[in-house]
Length: 132
Image 1 (spheres, one colour):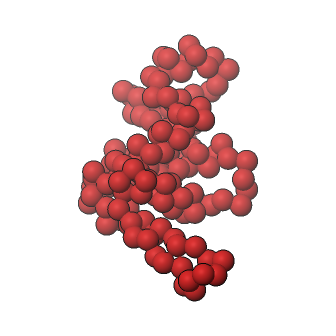
Image 2 (image 1 turned 90 degrees about the vertical axis):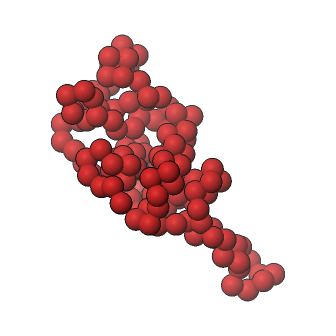
Image 3 (image 1 turned 120 degrees about the vertical axis):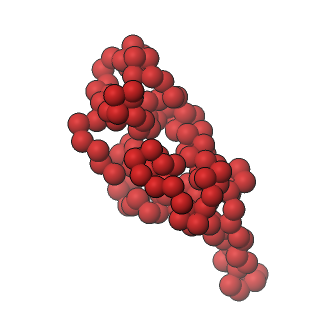
């Protein structure tokens, strides 16, 4: 499993942290939001299993349990990252990226730092300290 500064796992964690920061829901924590994105990613091919309801015919519904990111291949992690990107782009939310100088910056729709400064001059795009 590839880990570290430029790993897909680190990228996903940064994406989740950025989405949390922009959420108005104070009840959502990091792990819950990450799991939610993994569940959504199962619609895009990320592996998971559907657990049937514990009592058929009752109010309970089948539940999707996604694969752990720790057990996921790089290709599977990419499905999760792309799912989060798709959702962030649709809602015009920023995600974290590294620029060529290894500084963390906020990007909406995959824009470069220069494009962000041009398109969103009021936004402070560079992160003072890494939060994940």
